[in-house]
Structures are given as structure tokens and as C-alpha cells.
Length: 104
Image (cartoon, rainbow, N blue to C red; front, side, top):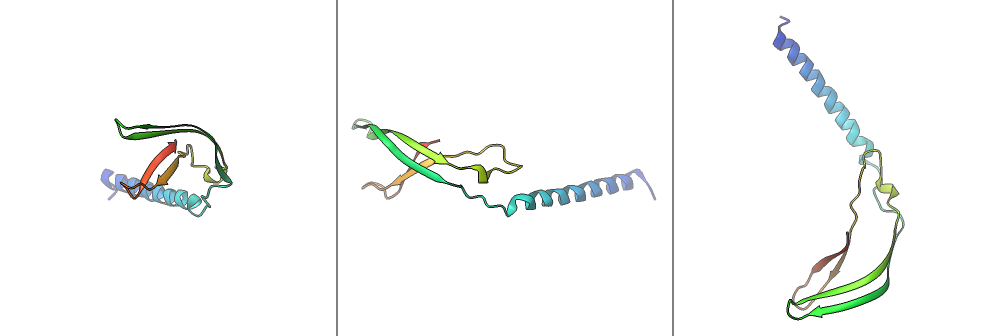
């Protein structure tokens, strides 16, 4: 009745149940937290240059910006790293929606 396969089955089942319970508690511990960015301000301080290249059909805009963001509400015990980026969306005659990453 107490064979090696029965003991292994009991140990593995109890281990998987314990891992499932701990995983569910881990998920529920941060699921209902508020993950909104705190104070956020973005301002273009000065524009440096706007260049257009007709050969490659591209444009370059260089500017200085001032960014203040309170990212503390995003951190919890399980957060090691946050990737933040700023994008600009605009419309042109050729395309109705253009998205450009301006800070990464």
C-alpha cells in the first residue's frame, strides 16, 4: 500500500497545492493596488533645431525638455524595474496616425 510511487505522488501533490496557494496569495497581494502615476509634468524648455532632408524624406527635431514624474506608486515589493517612455502622436497628409518615441 505504501509503495514508492504512492509516496512520490503524495509529496508532489502536496507540493503543487502549496505552490498554487502561495502563487494565488502572491497575485492577490498586489492585484488591487493603485498603479497610477503620481504628479506628472512635461514641458518643452527650448527647441534647438528642426531639420528636413528631402533626399531621405525625413525630418529631425531637437529640443530640451523638463520632465518631473512621481513613479513611487508604481513600486511595490515585487517591482525591480520600470520602463518609462514618452511618445508623440500627430497627423500628416500622408498618414492619419503617426507615433514617435521621443524619450526612452
